[in-house]
Length: 454
Ligand SMILES: [Zn+2]
Image (cartoon, rainbow, N blue to C red):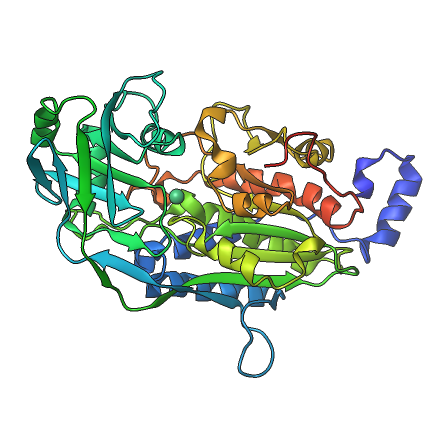
């Protein structure tokens, strides 16, 4: 710190000799620490860290071991010895279809795994009138929308957009970019969540796509499935705490789960999730390492590595239901998602913050040296697509830091270590250390800006 100010030559020498014993050098992010952490978490041996599986638990236990090594205390479920464990387990009751689901319209039937692929089913049935959606069209409420994918536009947005806008379900015309990602899924039966969810989408195979051309606009499209219960499982979230002088808290988070293995897919079928979101976990772990090695902070710092994000914020939802602290005490939540590569939509060595203009947190961090700008992809609605969102809905000032530039490896097995830019990651994480140390040791309380609270 003292190196920043210019002082006369002699006093500087004296001061630096005098202070050297007590003042540690400025903390930086360690590329070797980040590398080690990423190599383990995104390894094939982690089997894609799928929600509710042993591989998610394995990832959680590795992360817990690292927190312990950095002197961070456990804040998960009560442990047998009367203390706490690092892991918070959220029960996950699941259901699956008993037989391959069938899509029906205009007297025709298309079967899952053969003609169509039911990729995600938020409920065990749906029906609605067919609407062929062209770019710019408004979704008719309750319609089963047929989407023909546009080149060069992110697939997920094209599918989820109509669902957010009131469609009952989305049918996707077979396209190469979709086929690649869902070949494996086509052979498995989709699970059905216990609580109905709005997400229902079906990919039409090449033949089904052609046959759908004969289904009249407005004709009823339907699906009804028979259900069976799956054995109970649990989602693993890791929670650690660095106690401060006060009980005001800063929460730093990322998600440890990813998509598992596409069992039916030939070749590399393990979803390593290096960028999504081993990279965010690495950021939180580096902050834990640096803060854990420093002097006791003013505010208490919680570190959360949520499970179950990829199936809709299950770990974060459970955390809110069974929080390890009074939620009113959380001054700010900063999540880290997909910082493994730079986003060329923003200047070099810069990260973006979702919902930047919703609160004064981002601008204030930027004032304290963070290279943080507004999210350059507002059409993607990233603010609502990560674990910050359920917390923000509870009133907590919660944002996500990212540098995801919509790369082709998103939710693909080749989101792996080979595609990570470690120099970018190290610089990015390093640039946030001092601003976050400032936040942890300040009395600044971020606020939602007028009308911007979600
Ligand atoms: Zn993801």
